[in-house]
Image (tube, rainbow, N blue to C red; front, side):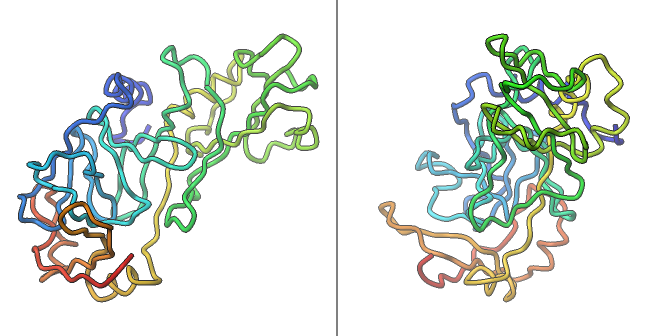
Length: 291
């Protein structure tokens, strides 16, 4: 485990205790005053949330610091705050955000659909899916675990995931990237084939246990990471090249959202600032037209 990194068990305990009512939303607290156009946020105490990420305040009360009349950030990097846990909704499901490294442009995620509360067997059921045109992508530090679920063939016992057995006549298996024994030609004999990303380092030195879950469960517990790239095209690309931050704004009465480029008097000061408790930008903005 790297210095300063929380243990997988600690991460899971934090996530599941904070998501006891998983779909309920709590207050999003901006680390800025109401006059600040582009605040950073905290959701709980573990993750600094700022541009290009943002907290969705669509359900915030009218008297909250952010009235949901505008936001700074990329549309596909919208986060929700659920029981003090930042969550990134993706087409494939919801993923808890455990860390964001802005200098490295990476976000660490934990798939909230992987485990039951007993945390003994992965609930394999979805491939990672990113929004069309999203700036997000997997990184070189990620590897892949491929699950062959409820198959009618008898495979290699060392790869058998016994807890995913169905009716006793179908079997489930898991393989790592690069395993020459992966039964690619037998995928049609399985109910599903699911690829799930994990951190490559979580698999180093693993695999000596009696069950493949001895390596798989800890790897899934550690989650995976995505990187994001700056937007280069369209209105947002022009806005950032001009020293602004991309976002959206809408007028009174909850009208349609329109694209907005939020200008900073001193963008360099924002880049250099280290405290998440100060406003990121002045309130000087420029509206550039429809999204």
